[in-house]
Image (tube, rainbow, N blue to C red; front, side, top):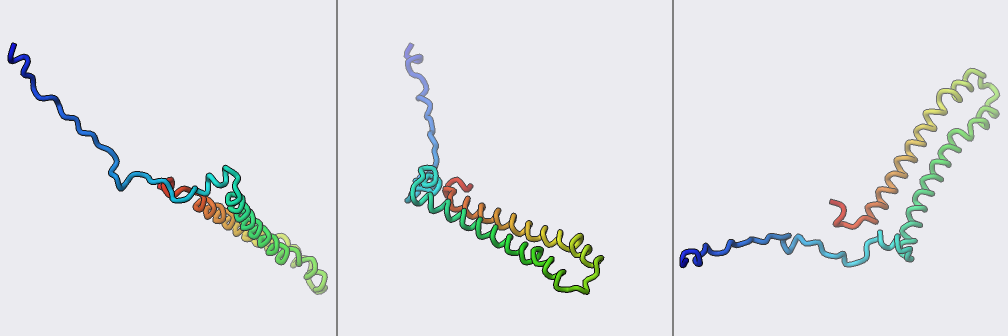
Length: 128
């Protein structure tokens, strides 16, 4: 009976956790995402900045299209010696690549604006 009372020492449990330096600390300021969702003045400023940058890109694309394509009727009217096949070649073959290039530039710029805004709004701890 004495042997039964002398049991082996209790098993030791090792508790591990995240090292102190690696623990997530709250940011020193409120993340921009909460500013936007709470509709604060700062959040409205962030959204207005995104809208302004998108509007600037759209107006730039519109100005490029107007200057490239919109002036063609004026150019054709002023140059009376332009032959009809040349006009159709310009309208049928050269206008569409120019419009595609402007559209591609606009989409790239809009995506970059959104990526910049997302980078601004994201919490640094969520980026990993």
